[in-house]
Amino acid sequence: MSTLNYTQYGLAPLIDVELDDTATLLKFNVVLEAKDGWISLRYEQPGVTDHDYIAISQNSIVEIKLIGEQLFFSKNYDAITTEEPLSSFYGGLTYDDYRAEQDRYKTVRFQARYNQGGKYGTRHGFNINIDLLQNPSATEPKWIPLSIDPDIKNPPPKDD
Image (cartoon, rainbow, N blue to C red; front, side, top):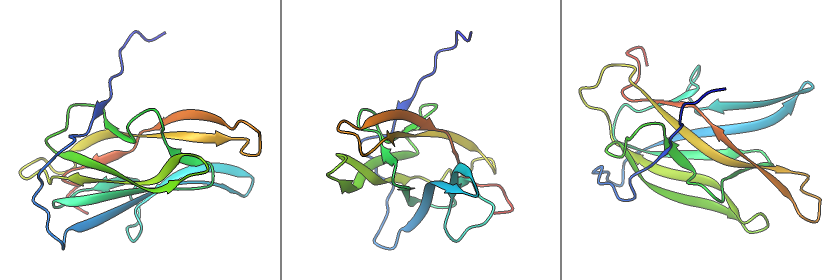
């Protein structure tokens, strides 16, 4: 049995990353699907191949969308948290794509500050806190809270 304490840190509520109307929007999808008899949870950055992480190469807005009828952002926890204090890099979390029937959201956005002068491939661990809907046709749906643990690489590896 592990005796380590696990801490999650919230994003900065207000952050000034100096973004303008032409700011880069980095899209990141979390997909839950059944295919060929397997249930899979995967990450994708549309338009970018071989990435299961978010690559920050300039000040940006990151959009995370949950794809799948059973995935929703957590009702009880912040949708995005970090594994160490990183509020100088990430903040301004906003929610979108509200589903009234489930009283939950499917999309979030936050601002990301580029790690100018950081080592290439610097890993910033973060968590996507979701609720997995079980048996949606039941009179009282059952929710299973989960934390998904992808990475942000800020700055990304040199070959990106």
